[in-house]
Length: 88
Image (cartoon, rainbow, N blue to C red):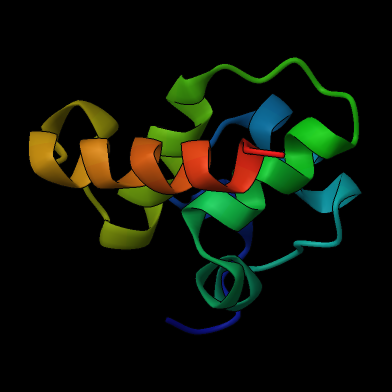
C-alpha cells in the first residue's frame, strides 16, 4: 500500500479518519505499520468512544474488504489480541 489518504480506504469515514489522524496515523502505510488492534487502541486511548466496529473497519480497510465480510476466525483473533492488550 502506498501513501494513500485514509479517507479513500474502504470502511473509513470522515469521523474514523479524524480519530486516526488525531493519533498520528495520517496515511494507509502508517495504518498498516501499526495494525488494526494498535490503531484501534490508540483511538480509544485518545478518549474517542469508538466501538469494536472500528476495529473491524480498520482491519477490512487494510484488506480492502467490507468489515462484515472479514473471516469470523480473523475477527476473533483481533478480539483476542485486543483483550490481551487490555489486561492489566
